[in-house]
Length: 68
Image (cartoon, rainbow, N blue to C red; front, side):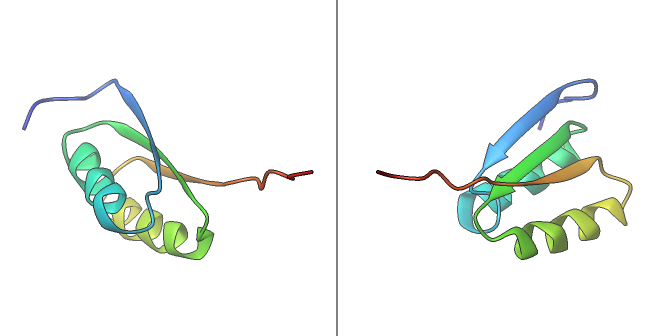
């Protein structure tokens, strides 16, 4: 992988699947990672796990759009 120190990455759909895998890959490459998804509880678990390993990850609650 390459060095992403000093970079910030935003990942949507980060609570599972490819999004979750991307979170781990970017964090381990040194990027600060901002994650969002519909399932905020899963995001918090991912954030806590990576923060315990000294990676920079922040979870943001996704707002819901109102359709008319």
